[in-house]
Image 1 (tube, rainbow, N blue to C red):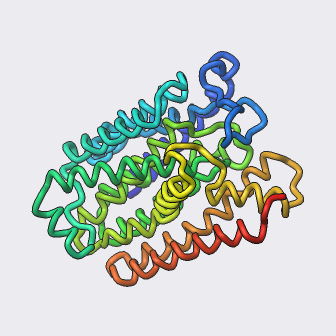
Image 2 (tube, rainbow, N blue to C red):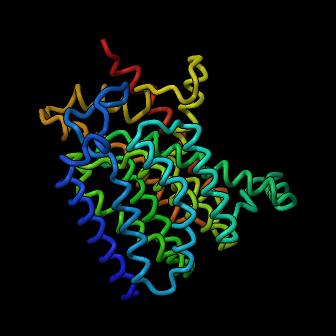
Length: 352
């Protein structure tokens, strides 16, 4: 464990250092790396580098050279490359569509299946488990679909300072607690190193938003978090898949509800809008009820309010990770709380 702490500290230091380099040199690369200030979901006031995924990825790869017994971590990071690169190229060129990024993330999931040897063989759902076990091709396809969907979910929630990275840290903390309880130190190593890399980025992202994840970072974190969520129950039969689902409750619920909402409004599922729960919290609660005048702090104030959803889900998921009925009940409660909060905000804090 001592060597793990040393590796994590190194990864954190590299991530912080590379993030600082990006900020200090943005006058030279800003024409390519700065985020656009035009768009329905753009609320920042100053040009900001959106390549925060780069220091996270580089820090992880460099850290692997100084980590012992990091075979599993190496396999997962190699598999993450297509998802990260598709998003990173979009950050630079602004010409990679959602479909291409989803294909790249699906490719990453397929590569992870091949390299690690894991995919969903059960979902703790009657009938579905039999199908997944009888037809490996269906199981692998379902796994790739789930991971690609979750990576897209993380991209959707990446809208405010610290939101996606904070949610990732909360979820990873819960996964680390379970991995420790089941003595899976190889997976724990991967989780801790990813947390250290994210923490280095978080220094610049929250609360003042000096550096953004960008699509590369969001798809990277979404893939890593999604694959950890799959590997943990597949490596340990006592861990319910519903534990992973509950821990990742907020991004999963947000993307499913977003697809339904846009279909209901006769919009394409990929059509951007500002009707996500976190967007409504910003426009109808934070902007109207908080007296903060600094726009960066108003932006950042959204994240802790959303983190509360994941803190409770992560805590209970890591405690009841073996008990599927309780986890399913808690998941139902979490979804109900999300929907209640959503429609309560719309009804009480109506815009003029």
